[in-house]
Image (cartoon, rainbow, N blue to C red; front, side, top):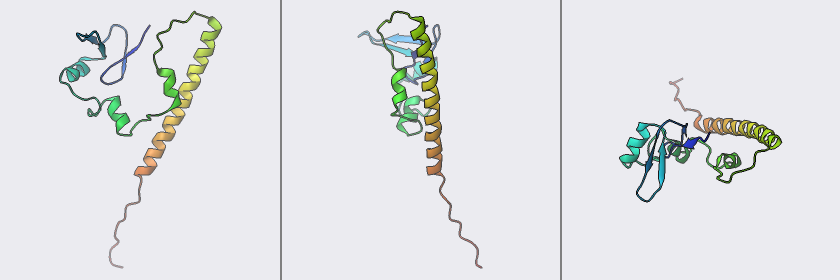
Length: 126
């Protein structure tokens, strides 16, 4: 089962869901829902649309550079099935997910510490 990414919002497109737009030059654009497809047709920029993943990354709300993102990239080379290799891969995927969650928690915590600045309240005459 291949899970595609929505071109506009970067969410997961499951098989049988969403739609695909094929341009005259043959480039395929997958969309998870009609909302993304309509915004694409209106030529909206995903980096300026607040609910997209691209906006969150450009605005500094999510991690951008991290070595765990390398595992999420698509690979088109078919690999011969091996049960042991599959078990090792699944264990590695779980470990990578744990590492990513830990780093995201640290990133969010760091972001929240920057936001928390002491507010100066002038006191009444003493």
